[in-house]
Length: 230
Image (cartoon, rainbow, N blue to C red; front, side, top):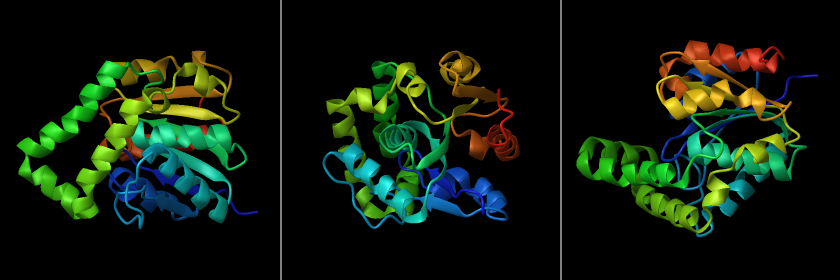
């Protein structure tokens, strides 16, 4: 029997290939890798809609239903929460879950500062705005607005706490970089959340550890898949 497919879900205003390009090249040698660009991002044919989180969860569920149950690797506070909701509602589709650049129960104020940073940086750095345009086309502004408005209405859905992870039937692994204190501490203490949750810190990596330290990140995820994470 062939191994489970690997699904890759990116962070806000990223794409699967931008955040997990190195892993796509490595894992594609032996696995079926499915890079999922979320609504309003990259090559996804769907533009962002109102109730964005519901739209994205539905889209990912449809993709997994089409290609079959598999391992999900998800980044930050877009791919991460979406993957968690899919695993919670359709555990039959998610055989394991890796979260990166993610802190269970992150404080809402810290999250809103991070979200506001996208607008500020895009306004201050024309090159960054041009990169968003290249990746997503002019729709990136509407995507950012739709996501931000939905987050303001339902912050708890974007910031699931430890109890949500503990309640999943899916083995879950936090793989965070060491540069950000909250992310480092979350990965170090993840094993205390519940028997199906574990974590590891990637030294020298930042928010997107798979991009910053691709070999270490890939090895950490593969160790988890092999059952040796704890």
